[in-house]
Image (cartoon, rainbow, N blue to C red; front, side):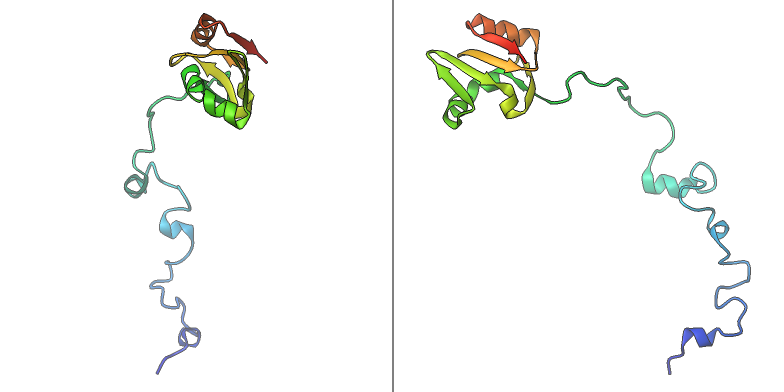
Length: 143
């Protein structure tokens, strides 16, 4: 017949916890949280989390100057027909007028080939992007 645990341990000093020294608090388990990960709980912490002490890798502590997205001028050149079709860019004669902020791009980089004459407005341009745009007769305008 099952027995109620509360009434089973009534009058017992330890309630089934072994000696009276057990189940006292965090001292019984070597501290709370990450206590002792460099001392008495090192093996347990190392097996769970791996290497946690010492230097590993590097981190840049300076803020980047451009926090938004970047895009290569070659990629913009490839999607020019789609930009015109969707209304993100306009074509006046042989010149394509495009604002990079429409796509959420803050900086235009100089990767890729340029086949169209473009007037592009963006927050920033790389020197190579400016050279490629102006080589085709376009303009790189900063906003």
